[in-house]
Image (cartoon, rainbow, N blue to C red; front, side):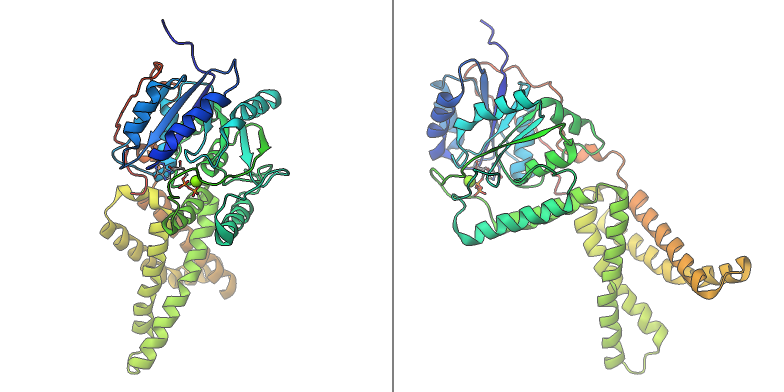
Length: 406
Ligand SMILES: Nc1nc2c(ncn2[C@@H]2O[C@H](COP(=O)(O)OP(=O)(O)O)[C@@H](O)[C@H]2O)c(=O)[nH]1
Ligand SMILES: [Mg+2]
């Protein structure tokens, strides 16, 4: 007998959650309303016995269970969820943590709210009226959660309008929205914990609704959230914010300005330690410190996903070469504008700086770290070509996916 297609695929990312699987599956099975056909897809990166426990529990679970285990956990939690999407077959996808901090009893309400409002994304929110974040352990985690929410909302005011909890890990999204993001040039490039942020910014869901909920205590095991996740989150924010070339040009300019600090610091050091050194060679040397600083920031934050075209040494030498050419080109260019176009010194200098900046940005952005073929490295979502789910079948499919962290 062929199983009827599911209405909702419940994607559960798991990393060493063996002691939570039984309680989770029991509560999900009891919570799913009659008439809503559900399947559970585990997106697992565990190194303990979680896989074995999922296989055991799947055998007695009334819902179809799919296990997708990744031997190479590219992209962390977000990467796992996106791979889980490719195994999901239903028109609705719910993402929920395994540790029962998210109440499975809300799954039916999330879908019902999406159906009644027509929203493509329904988020379970700790910050909406009636919600509660009591399960966040300690004042420090509460502070981190509220300040990162504030920072994120101010960086993406339009995309996150109507979302009180863009950091939530519990939400329902229509397959159509996920497929739209996958069809974009850059696909989905999740990095760490903030998969909802990635989806909200890249999918631009048509209609967002929220359902308040109380974030509970962990059922068993320990949190995997670490300080390293904090750094990943910052990188993720910069990657998303600079997806637009105008925003990239602004960030490129701001990083360039910040390069004056190491430049001037080294210039000062050289004048103190080598008083015999004349200005021109001192400034040329000091300029290299500024360029190194700029390169480090640009290479690791702005263009982290575009580094594959050239080796690090080529990137550094090109970046340095273009930066030094800037020094050499600016003055003759301004002189040309004054002599040839009859401009006065101030506008000629400003124009030459703008021309040189634009040329430098274009070489770096369009050639050195070009975006063409960006989807090649991203674990993009395969639109509705997921395997048919057989009830209680456990299916380990270790597709190697290139690491978006490079
Ligand atoms: N597949 C996968 N799941 C992860 C990873 N890191 C965390 N998780 C899962 O994501 C969910 C949330 O993680 P948790 O440690 O509870 O984070 P917290 O709630 O912020 O403390 C849990 O179900 C974890 O098992 C990962 O690297 N890969
Ligand atoms: Mg948790």
